[in-house]
Amino acid sequence: MTCNFGRRWYRLAAAGRPAWRHEDDGEVGFTAGPTVRLDVPTAAYLDAVHTFHRELMDTMGQRVEELEHRGGLPHVHLDLAHLRREHEQRRHWLTKNLDCAPQTDWNTVRQGAHLLLGADRRATTPTG
Image (tube, rainbow, N blue to C red):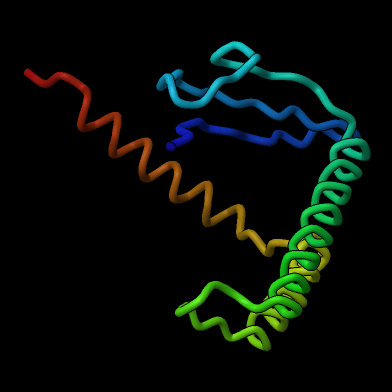
């Protein structure tokens, strides 16, 4: 199953605007149209992200515990100690990444965009 869709999150002060586009490949059903854009308060979005993360991590933690108690499939070697450590590290990824402030050099970005857009314009401009 493939899920081919683009998504963006525009931050607008206290709200965000998630936008996505997907093509119907007949394998994945969507109830929304092929292009969607809506406004969501940033606090509500972050609450939903935290809830999803907590529920996912709890569920995965339960699955790791099940494997630790009953073992894996016959003839399948699982490093359960490594799996447990890896899962515990994942529990902290969201907080770690949300606390990360990108150090973007916007002047360099603008210069690069100017070079790329300028080069693109010259390449597509008819001559003669």
